[in-house]
Image 1: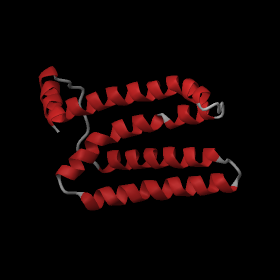
Image 2 (image 1 turned 90 degrees about the horizontal axis):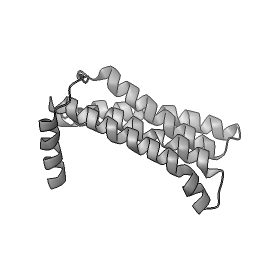
Image 3 (image 1 turned 90 degrees about the vertical axis):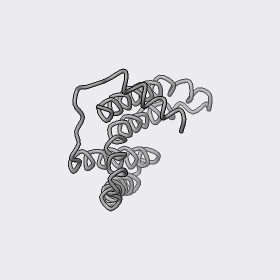
Length: 140
């Protein structure tokens, strides 16, 4: 039940940060007087969601000392993102090559984690377990 609660709490935080990044992309672009930053920040905000979708599985693998699996997954994401970034850069996409690299890396790593993970979340959320997790987290 703790894992389910941690997963859904992470999803909530990820969604809030994603939409927060999207909403703040305009003011940030205005602050730097760079209107081209708005769509870049908007798209990069999706990285918060990828992190939220994978953090519980990543913690589960870490707890089980499956570092080799984590390294292989991350390597798969890095290679996929790197290929997209290099191809996009060679095609002249500029900063968008970095956006594509980052998003593909996060997406592939998250998908691979979900594919090989033995644990998948249920639709359970417990306020008591959430309080336990928050108490532990704040002490960390």
